Amino acid sequence: MQSIIVSKNEANQRLDKLLAKYLNKAPKSFLYKMLRKKNITLNGKKADGSEKLEEQDEIKLFFSDDTIAKFSEVSVEEVEEGIQIIYEDENILLINKEVGMLSQKAEKDDVSLVECIISYLLKSNQLTKEELRSFKPSICNRLDRNTSGLVVAGKTLIGLQTMAELFKERTIDKYYHCIVKGTIEQSQRINGFLYKDEKTNKVSITDRIVKGADPIATEYVPLKTNGAYTLLQVKLITGKTHQIRAHLQSIGHPIIGDYKYGNRNVNEQMKKQFSLENQLLHAYRIHFPQLEGACSNLSDKEFVAERPALFERIVKELF
Image 1: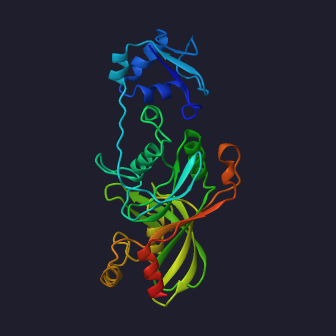
Image 2: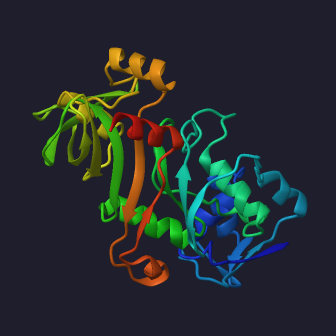
């Protein structure tokens, strides 16, 4: 028999959800059968799995250690890559993601920002391998591999849930810097519809409703221009795949260095001049709304991530 005392990171979820994480190799039918036969109990009583857990609840597993080991697998992948932390508290991390790093794994053997975060928390003794059986810290927003800047990660379940809700409700203000082809002299909000081709992982923008397309909105403010290029501040109103890159390209102002949506001649020129091989798009600032509860310390706070060195160099030389 083993006993699980529900921790802060395991509370506020259904019992069956926690069991599926803790005994991640067990079929769901087995878990529900064990609940019916009282081989799994909650606070000494029969449970059906739908109960919402509270901190310090006790779950008892009346199995042999061999059975528990058979149905439970802890996968820990520690990596050496470091992360640039902008801010940290009990519940969240704000990270300045570097160009070239995946936000999340695309393939089994990939090393992404998520693995780097978990390794950091393990090495700093903020997380144990045992805790990874039932809770896995993760990111709450994603950036393209070759886009740099601010990523929000949840260290605790309440941190993950709170931040995920903010991004879902679009109450976090997200601002980007980018350099685009051409001259832009006035601030503007542009609207459209974005359609993603899953086969090519490429999106297209239209000005009218198309089946399968999502409405999008993007705001931009010109910061500097030299007649050939413009440094923009962009605010995401909606947050769809490749939205900024495709939306700016659709109005004739592609981001320099963007080989998927950009201008090939400009990109080759910038590669020759600056050895630039990625889009100059950086998530540089976020602003939190008024918050209550566990993350109220973030209310109305703003955080900024410095642009990469190459981005800074290009800004200085172009403008």
